[in-house]
Amino acid sequence: MKKYNIGILGATGAVGREILKVLAEYNIPVGELKLFASKKSVGKSILFRGTSYQIEEACDTSFIGLDFVFGATSNEVAKRFRDSIVSSKAIFIDNSSAFRLDSTVPLVIPQINGEDAVLHQGVIANPNCSTIIALMAIYSIEKLSKIECMLATTYQATSGAGALGPLELSQQMNAICNYKPLEIEVFPHQIVENVIPQIGSFLENGYTTEEMKMQNEGRKILHREDLCISCTCVRVPVVRSHSIAIELVTKEELSIEQIRETLSKENGVLLYDSPEKKEYPMPILTSNQDLVYVGRIRKSLFHPRGIVLWCSGDQIRKGAASNAVQIMMKLIGLVF
Image (cartoon, rainbow, N blue to C red; front, side, top):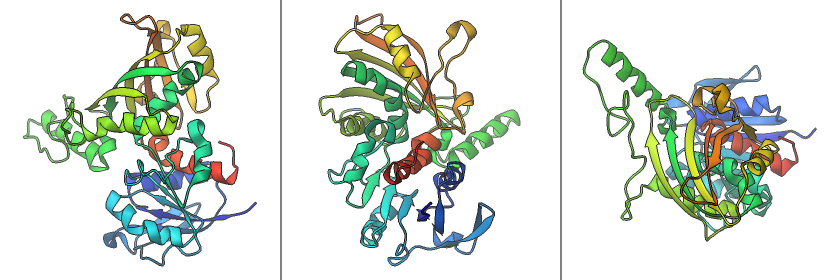
């Protein structure tokens, strides 16, 4: 089997390290492996499949000879190295938001629009984590009948804000238990014993930048410029896995049985919907794996063609690292 030379920009961060785990778990045939991070990490090493790899600082010539480069870093760094990666003939699969709405860059969830990946011009964008989880949950419904509109409320874990998010949650929990003052640095307000209805910065329309991603990216992924999604994004005191409450209206009326049947056959989705047994998606179930759990499926009480559901998924894996690796697998013909 052919081996592929792979680089990871931002290899020491949460997503970069998760990409390494996923590459190993999926048995990706890796030849040369180059790990890039900031200057402060140069000289450190990371173990992959029993071999220790030294961290390097990337430069314009770092990507020569690589087949794929995974971006797990900031928009600024992604933009800085895009041209160097493309000119080296590597395919850049980027997790930042820098290129998601660029008309020349495919925005891909392999189970939904994997065919778009082959249209790349050297760069493929990974969607926002909540967008991936939500669209995985609703795509089978969209195939049954076009979705006319959708309301979504996300319940996003602290690790979605980076490694310092869970740390701040833990520190605040300890402070409360020991009657000490809370330190607030990562989030705009105290996160322990609280929920924060703001992720991203506010726009003139009253929505945040994070909230607009689901509509803007959803339209591109589903090839549905007419798709309307109103979203509210909430940070919750959970370490890992995002959950989303979704209410949508379809063009034709669908039965719950139809929806459950098609969801049960959907690749990458687990129908987990037995309320009588207290079985429904929760972050504690969906962390550290790649399936999006879908449950609490029921008819809307305000619209005859409305459907309500609840889903959960690991935003670091399927919402970032695993989706990126699955894009690579789609391109090289591996099954996932």
